Length: 426
Ligand code: SF4
Image (cartoon, rainbow, N blue to C red):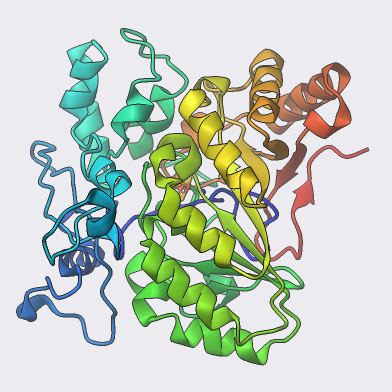
């Protein structure tokens, strides 16, 4: 799910597609990419049907695979997945089979059916059919805890607008394309993007806890380009030979869709790369599914012998409730530096009031506002775009209201540029 993304994108500069080693896969089930992801999701360690095996890919215990079908957005979910190592013990079970951790169960139970989302929020049923149609290309996925922070009966709720598929996504708009930030041109190895000096970005997985409709990687070919699906090896080999890289950024998708075991595998391997001194994680989990910040994740983080930065992704103050503040406090307690990246989104946070309240709420949660991104021009998200002149005006108003440390940098990611490009800098 934004942040100085070294190599790439913004959010988690999170981006996108769930997929494989985790749970959710975005996109319609009928695409070849989704078939691969579905097979991987079913895999859950030893759980993959032989006929679906994907040679060369290591399996991740996945909680589930829930999808929105074209015809009816049925929640097809779920399968069961084995879960994190040690989860059974955490759950107090006596079975030899590992049980999903709580966050994985919550993830598997996410809302994926537009009809259910509209029903839960008492919304006009007329919103359902366009949502089902738009979800065919990029499925709906939103954790129930995040839904609970939305206002009932309000189709303009700023959290709802970020996740509800809309007919506007189907419009072709000139200037909006599949790879707006040039990710594929910066590919250094499968799943490894290298854009900025000293930093490299690992597309760790395609899976996310939530599907943000404006995601700049909503069309990213995760089935081929997720590093974990290649057992990390090509990416690690590349990193081994490039001693200029001193910071590794885990992005995606959302890297915390991976189990603690897979994350530990990766960071254990980093011990052999002494030039990598910092680990940065771009994630929306602490915001949309804060239960992910559990003892297992904190144990992993505490054991990583690198400086650690976690860049969360929140766009509106209503996203930050007590559970989010608690998750952030737990991260801070194990020595993590917390930053936030926001995307400026029409209808969601395009006012100085909304942005100022977001900065205040973030700081109350121990998170510093880092970047305010203008929208990456990805196909399907044009209705979220805010004119650059308006973005500059808002940013100036924000700077006039808040202390400097609460004013995020207003930036754009330009394909081929070797750093984020400041917008409207004087
Ligand atoms: S869908 Fe959302 S959480 Fe996932 S990578 Fe994109 S912006 Fe981040």
